[in-house]
Image (tube, rainbow, N blue to C red):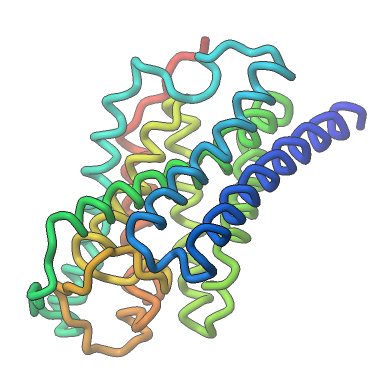
Length: 280
């Protein structure tokens, strides 16, 4: 029981610091740019970068200063950096799989509308998406996952952090049937990324998988990501005219039954193709 209380206390301290720093970033954005700051391209990017540091600082404080661990334990091993590229490629491919199925059954078609395309907007969108993914992965699978994994095992860490990951998407999950399907999609994706972290003992592969999926879906293709527009432009490359139960409708691919193919393939890929890294 003492070990549980200590871990809970440290995790709450980590979350408390994160909430404090995140609040400061948001308050600064509202103070200088108003409540609609997220619609301003440069401010939105600045906020995403600020939110990244808002979770990085608690990680450093808790891991290095409180736990007195070495920097190599934070999850950013240089020897696993190649996994970032592998994850980006795999994340993009597992998104194309459900889109391909939707196209094959006539629920989606190639219909590019690129009059508003801008390389600057694409670049801003990709950078903002990358920092957003880094923030999410560090919040869920850095200190919290590490603390639970080392003390109580990988399954406990996976279950607790998956619940947290679902809670982070609570707004989307309350959008009727599409929200329920999106919840199943997020659940599979969380299991995939947790397994990727356990197998590689680094955050690079989960970050790559998450970024590959979100970046291709949002900034590149112009598809909503769990109901959110992650792009900085108004271009679209696909038209989805089929049954929303299959396509996800306004929720995006993640809100449709066909979208479940993506994270299921990703989970199978990690389970079958990624060998466990040596500890230590």
